[in-house]
Every structure is written in structure tokens, then in C-alpha cells.
Amino acid sequence: MSILNKYILKKFLKTFLFVVVIMVLVVVVIDFTEKNHKFIQNKLSWNDIISYYYGFIPYITSLVTPITAFIATVYVTAQLSMRSELIAILSTGKSLFSVIRSFFVGAVIIASLSFVLNGWIIPHLNKDRVSFEVMYIKSPYYFSDKNVHFKVSENSYLYLERYDNNMEIGYNVTLENFDGVKLKSKLFARQIIWKNDLKKWRLKSWRKRDLLDRGEKIEDGFELDTALLVGPSDFDNNYRLSETFTMSELDEFIKLQTLRGADDIDLYKIEKYIRIAQPFTVILLVILGVIIASKKSRQGTGYLIALGFAFAFAFIISFVMSRAFAENGSINPLIAIWLPNIIFGMITIYLYRVIPK
Image 1 (cartoon, rainbow, N blue to C red):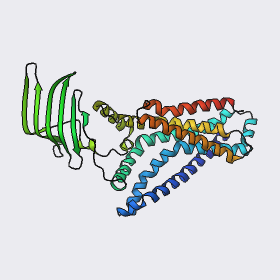
Image 2: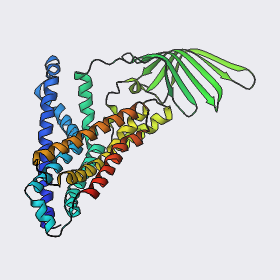
Image 3: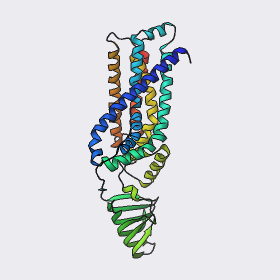
Image 4: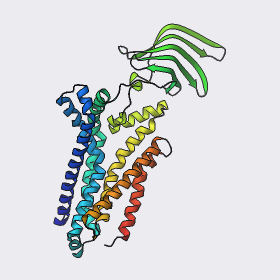
């Protein structure tokens, strides 16, 4: 790497770290102000609060990484342009691509760290952070869904009229077993109770009907223990649950939810696709930032930075909208998460071709 490349790379990374620190500090101050009454209400010590922000700060850092990388790129490039450093670089025979390459190396470093942190390290920190928010920040959780269905095996389905997550008891339970589309057996119980010592469910006041080729067989009883591919955790608060999974845990959970035929599976796919797409978003926005800010403007550095913020705002809006469409099922999650990258990738290619070099 040449001296010039090292100079630009060092300047870019230092500016990126500075922007990240400033933005995270602002977010933490705002967050503390909003949650301070909860901290006081629950009589939390400073150690508890510091432990919470120990997980919150990396989470926010990861969240703002693409935008902070973009802002840092625009600022550094605008400074190079307004001080005529960029003109001097290009006048030596070097192309704009060589300047972009310096930023690209920095973007790859940031993107790689972001992928590792988002995939394996931050989820572990999020477990404590989310648990803290559920316990002290959010209102008490009560499972309120009615007429709940689970696919508990390849050919078996569980139905509950309602479930009390505090008592860990389900009411009016039906367990059906099929052979293809043909019903083979049906078990009904008044209650299903989780026995933590056995790690099994206990059915109360149950009756089972086995449909045979000739007639049917009926059994009943007061209690029956059974193991199902469902546990009390499936009725717990799922607040930000996807953020607490590492990539491997997320893949396993998606497979499990697919087997069960769960309705909320797209939420976890979206989380997975965001973690994969974010490193590419960082690289894309950095290249776009160089192209936007490389042209010297009579309005000064402030105009170029403002222009960069406008592009950043447009990207955020497009990402939020595409994610919302994915969550409500209007667009395939994979397409929705990659759509902003595709759109702004096309914009980047177009601007690179038309900008004076």
C-alpha cells in the first residue's frame, strides 16, 4: 500500500471512530434520559445500569455502523476536495478509482468486524440487555393469544384454546396425528401443565381416539405425561428474541420454526438477512460517499456533507420501508432486505460513470 493510500485510510478510520463515538454518546444520553424514571422506580444500582449499557453500547454501535461509515467517508472526501488535495492526487496521474480503493480497504475492515460482531459477539451481549429491558423497562408480559396452533412433529399438530404463561398451564388442548391427510388419532385434554422436574407436559382429564381401519379405539384417564416439541419458552415474551441469537442459533431456530409452521418465521429470516447484508451496505455506502463528495463545490464542505446526509436519509427510509413490507408479508424477506442495496448500488454505478474524473 502506497503512502497516499495509507494517509487516506488512516484519515478515514480515525474520522469513522470519532463519528461513531459522538453518535453513540448522543444516543446513550437520550436513552438514559428516557429510561431514568424506570431505573429510579426499580431502585437499580449504578452497577446494574452500567452492566445494561455494557451491552447496549455495542448494539447501538453496530446499528449505526453503515451510516457512520458513510458520514465519515463524505466528510473526509469533502475535506480532500475542498483543500484541493484530491485535485493534486488526480493530477499526478492517479484515477478516482485509486482513491476509492483506499476507502474500500477501510470499508472492508469495518464490514468484516461488523459481520463478526453482529453474528457472534453482540448476540451474547444482547441476551443480558434484552433480559434487562423485559424485567425493568417493559410492562409485565402476559400471553394473550387465543386458539394457538403448533406443528410438533412431521405429522402431529397441537392446539390450545388459551395459555397462562405465569402458571404454565394450557386449557382445552387437542393433539392430532395424521398419516398424510388422513387423521389417525386425536387426543383431547382439559389442561396441559408443564412439569419442570420431568421436562415434560402433563395432560389432565384426557381422552384419546385412535381411528382404525375397522372402527375406533377410545382411551381416557386423569393424567398422562408426554414430551412435545414445544416448551414454556415458546409462550414467553419474544421481545427482540431474534437479536439474542448467534448466526448458528438463528439458523437452528429458523429450522425449528419452519418445522412447526410458525407464523412469525419471517421476522427471524429478516434478522439473518440483515446481518449478511450489512457488511455489503457498509462497502456500498462508503463507495457512494466518495463519489458524492469528490466533486469540488462552490457551496463549500457543508453543502457536500448536507448532500451526504440527504443520501443517508434516503437510504434509511428505503430500508425501513422495505423491512416493513417484509414483516407484513408483502415482499419476500430476502428481496426486501437486499432491495436498498440493489437500488443504491445502481445509483453508485451511475454516478461513478457520469462524475468527472
